[in-house]
Length: 336
Image (cartoon, rainbow, N blue to C red; front, side):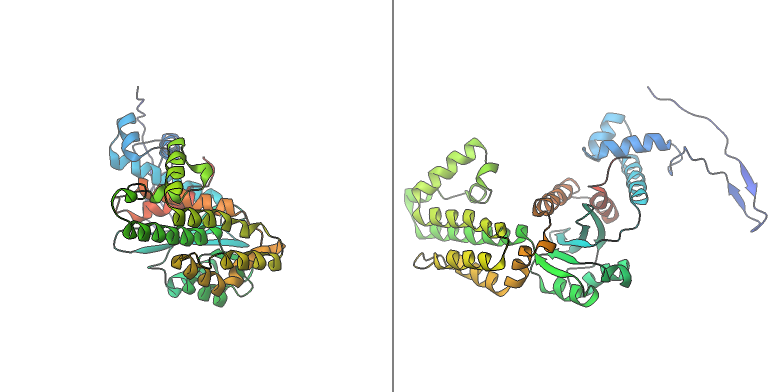
């Protein structure tokens, strides 16, 4: 059942500017056909469903639902206030198949994204965030969590000189997962006949942690590891590497890493050897996690990254970048 309100909006002559202005009604949304209360209801529903689903459910035009959702998210951002982060997380996302990138910066203390922008993943684009934040707030940043992309580091060192740089576990483990998949592919190319059938199409069986696999996935993984010794060794090494972030002192972490790297000897795992070289080259940014003042919730960082990717999949095909920006910036804010 729908309820329609019929009312007149007063128009008055402004004595200051001489123009005719319309009365602003607080209960009416920016779209004049709906109340603000209804707009907020649509926005709350769009947090967990697609525009298409809500349009069909409420029998509304697709564009009307999208516009109401944008108004709702804008109100969320206005209520959240101006950010002044002490610890930030920097993430790059691809918004098209043509390698068009945008940068997302999050306040890791308050647990929410605060900036979406840039033209690419260059140092100049990263600098746009610090210019938006302002010199005073940038200088108050004590820690920046990011991947190992050099332009991000360079911009941070220039504009946030007091910030320690920490390379986050999520991206490092992703590099290790890519190395593991290269080993899987090389084994598939090396073998022939019936021995290949356990390896083909098993990329997403190897990459997740054991506890995240379904029962079917665990069975497939056991079969794969039993069938190929090299992949079994590579998988066990991948699982053990996560222990690196459990050490509270850099010396202990370094000893663990050196032992892990020495275990690669005679294993003929070239992708892992290249991965170890990369870790050695970026050690300072990884070991920074051992310092008590640099402890951040790596689980939150990974969870936020995953949530952004879910938003991207839902918004796939939409050309409205502003809508994607609002979705990402409000994904961790409370509902209105």
